Image (cartoon, rainbow, N blue to C red; front, side, top):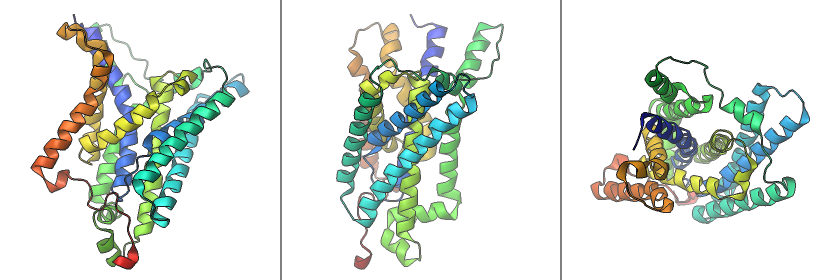
Length: 333
């Protein structure tokens, strides 16, 4: 039987999981609005996650009294930097060298995951390596308690998280405002829709593609810190699994589900979180035994259904940018 505590636990687990894919999907939308289809998200998240974990673990073990501020800021900065670096590599190969975007994205995924696993095996021979202090700093919340069990549960549902949960929502809202209310955002959308037209209007297509892709990949890298220090508790065991890689693909699916609108990511990511954790809570409601793998397929099945529906309705505002995945050759303008 589903209890009040189970419902609260389900929602809170969904919010934390949803935040990971919300941040990475924000980065992917920013990239795709420039006309770049980046399938390297899983690899970028993996190698950024490894880099952030290595910095956090090294800092914790280099001093007896680590500072919470540095324990949070250092992994975030390195994750942003590594993500941006891989975004720069992707941009150079697809924008400057005109390489196939799908191939480059898959290469980056293989490279990022391979490098992460190799370096994890070399630097952390013990899978039990843990950055517990950093994880506690990321999950620190307001210490407010209520005498009422119901009020405490509702408070925890809304405010019982670390700061990254609210930062992700802010990023999604700001990204929406950027696309709809600012000149650079409108220029970026023009580049993604028709780079030739944007170029003719005096917009620097190459600059917009580079900046959007680098910033988008940096956000994907930042999302890995949520996975590491809020979802997996700062443990090194993440490097021996494919979970973060799978979440990277789920982030790409969420972009399609949200129809390339950042504000839809907020509720869409939490819905994906509920579906992801359904295997742990739904059997108590439906009284049926279904394999875990089938429950975890639900977000992908929902994405396929949404993709079919949006294709059938053919509303322009629900379609991807027209120039998505197509290299731009200025001499053909």
